[in-house]
Amino acid sequence: MKIIIGLGNPGRKYTHTRHNCGFKVLEEIAGHHRIEKEESKYDALIAHLKISGEKVLLVKPLSYMNLSGRPVQRLVNWFKLDLSELMVVYDDMDLEPGVVRIRAAGGAGGHKGMLSIIECLGTKDFSRIRVGIGRPPEGVVDWVLGGFHPDEKPLLQAAFAKAAEAAEVWVKEGINRAMNEYN
Image 1 (spheres, rainbow, N blue to C red):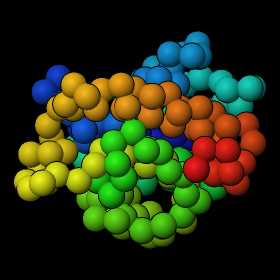
Image 2: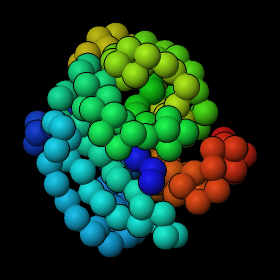
Image 3: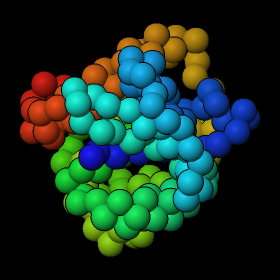
């Protein structure tokens, strides 16, 4: 089994914000597969599906971005998941809008949702897909909680599709193949 965590903030207010890139990528993945079951558990929305015969959970933590680690830790513990079976998808201000980068491990890079996950899991050794949102001229909070500019929308839609494809390659062929093909 694989678990793909998409980071974001719950609620209509945040649906189209930069911080919800992780949620958008999960929605892209879900749009290409039959959802077998949906549930709300451990402060997260969970969609069960299969990709090439592999059971996959798409998880949207509902704890708000800065507390994402708690639901992730609970799911990892509940399923006794090896961290090689975990992928986290999130926004990254250090990448230009629309750029996608995949890594097998790494630090939080200032991202509070990732910091929460690293602290709760006690390690940074899990795969991640970062979707670039660009750096603001000023006001980080307003930037990540703001919507995309019209000229950014096509770049981000393409990035969501690319990140979803990369996640599926990770499920089928592993992190090295996903990095080689999509970085």
